[in-house]
Length: 384
Ligand code: IMP
Ligand code: MG
Image (cartoon, rainbow, N blue to C red; front, side, top):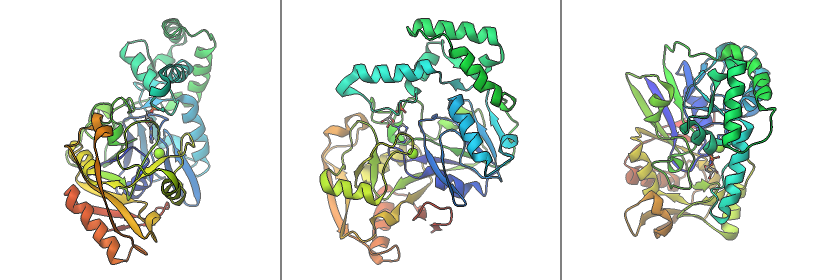
């Protein structure tokens, strides 16, 4: 069976590690959305790697960056260089769709400029040029990878994009072409056969249509986009919804169960909650049942996977949001009043209090937790 792995919160749920675990029973690992704003941390043996663009597979997989993904060529090349030290034949197993949208220095500059103009209303983007790349593409002035096969055509397109964006620098086309040279032979749509794992990015609450708009990312994060974004089909698939035993968010926007002050700092320290892409401290809060239920429903999740369960070990009490005063409306999350209850903490994952915590989640979210992850390495996970 094929799989789609998505994050049920605001990103950083540990999808990379879960994808690595599930990758063992799939041939293809396919990225279909997001771009270098993602940061999936994966341990290959003892080597820690943050995957921004490369799918989180291993040397047993074929990797496909399909057309729904936004590509920053410099990031991609440096990631390939790094992972080649672990998997020397990686390039032979990697395919990048020629239809991928290319992030240029123009979009990265626009990202910063737009955020600055927004001032106190800024989204707190990762600064990777995601939003402007999507909007330039929608305006039909964006660059696609296939544009780079023809130098003169590319120069024309870059000139137009620069003119429309009031961007002065003339050297962009040459820079893009020299990066493209290194990856050119892998830019093709492969024939995909065998089991596929579609690797989602960010989280459902950051989806531009289903999340906390306008504090969202710019490419869809919901599982149905796996097919539109990749152009692939699946006869039979299951959707895995990954979430942390608590909640985090980077950037601005509503976060009903956020914990401020010392308790928030403590959770951040315990979970090492600092952004894998930007290094920013993540906002931390308790687990939020109505939010998880909402995200699971809009993405038709089949199974749940809970990560970072061990981070809460030893806490005297653990907060859980069990309801809001109103029906959950994502764009209006900021005005909802959460009811937070405190359950007894657990010493370790064998404790009965932890079993109760799991049951409460399964009851509220109305789905089974199939895997519980309790550490960064591939082995630190158990099946239920
Ligand atoms: P952008 O995707 O860089 O435009 O950022 C939009 C919002 O999504 C910001 O709040 C970012 O912090 C957040 N975001 C984007 N990518 C990730 C991610 O991979 N993990 C967590 N948050 C993310
Ligand atoms: Mg991340």
